[in-house]
View 1: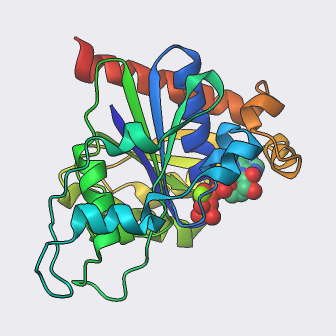
View 2 (view 1 turned 180 degrees about the horizontal axis):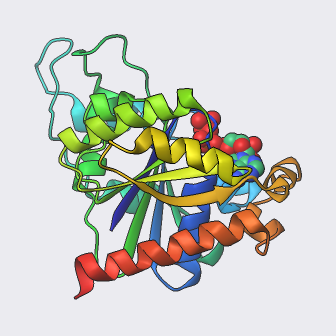
Amino acid sequence: MKIAVSGKGGVGKTLIAGTLARLFAKEGFNVLAIDNDSAMNLSYTLGIDKELKEKIIPISEMKNLIEERVSVKGGGPGIYNINPEVSDIPDKYKVTGPDGIQLLVLGSIEEPATGCLCPENALIRTLLYNLFVKRDEVIIVDFEAGLEHLGRGTAKGIDVMLVITEPSQKSLDLCSKIIDLSKKLGIINIFLIANKVFDDSQLEIINQRVQDWGVPLYHTIPFDSEIGKADLNGESPIDFNPDSKGLGAIKSLYLKLKQLKDELFDL
Ligand SMILES: Nc1ncnc2c1ncn2[C@@H]1O[C@H](COP(=O)(O)OP(=O)(O)OP(=O)(O)O)[C@@H](O)[C@H]1O
Ligand SMILES: [Mg+2]
C-alpha cells in the first residue's frame, strides 16, 4: 500500500508519516519511507542515527545519476527522457533505520513555472509512480507542504492520501484544494485528519466546514506537548514517549490503515 501525507506547512505531516512508518515496521511490515520534502527532516521523526543522517544525499542532488537516467543523448537543452529506468534506485540509495525501516530521501526541486518540468522532478515522479509494492510492504511518502506535488503529478498512483489539517481556516482552505486535485489524479482513498486539536469546539467548526466536501473527518490527533519535547531533545517522538496521548491517537490511525490495507489488498 502506498500512503502519502500532505497539507499546509507545519501541520504535522512529517510527524504522522514518520510515526506511521515506525508503527508498520514494528509489526513486521517492510516499510519504505520516502522523504519528498526539500527540508528533508523525516529522518528525525524516524529516529535515524545522526551519523547516518549526515551521509544521506538526496536523489534530487545526484547530478550524475540524473544526467545518466534522464538526459537524451544528442538532445538539446530541455530534451530528456520522461520515462527513465528507475527500478534499481530505491535499493541502491535507501538507508536502514530503527525497526528495520528503509528510508529513501528524494528531496525536492522547485520548478520555476508550470509546464517547465525539470529533469530532477521527472526522475522523482517516475520513481514514485513506478515503485513496486510487494505484499506486506508499505510505502509512506512525506510530501512537501502545499500543492506542487499534485500539480506536477508526483502523487499519481498513491493508494491512500492523508490530508492533514490543524484547527485553522487557512489550513482547511489548502486541504480543500488538495482533496480536489487528489480526486482529479484518480486517488480514491482520501482521508482528512485533524492534528493539534485542543478541544471539541474546534472539531465542531472543522466538521461544519467539511460538510459538503465528500471527504469526512477520518481521524483526530490531539495537541500533545510530549511531541514538542521529543523534537527539542532531538529524539523520535515514538522513542521519546510512545504512551503520550498524541502518539496513542497516531497508533489508532495506524490500526485503521492496517485494516484498510487488509480490505484493499489481502482479501
Ligand atoms: N499533535 C501535536 N502536538 C504538538 N505538537 C505537534 C503535534 N504535531 C506536530 N507538532 C509539532 O509541530 C511542528 C511541525 O510538525 P511537522 O514537522 O511534523 O509538520 P510538517 O507538516 O511536516 O511541517 P513542514 O511543512 O515544515 O514539513 C513540529 O515542531 C512538531 O513537533
Ligand atoms: Mg515536514
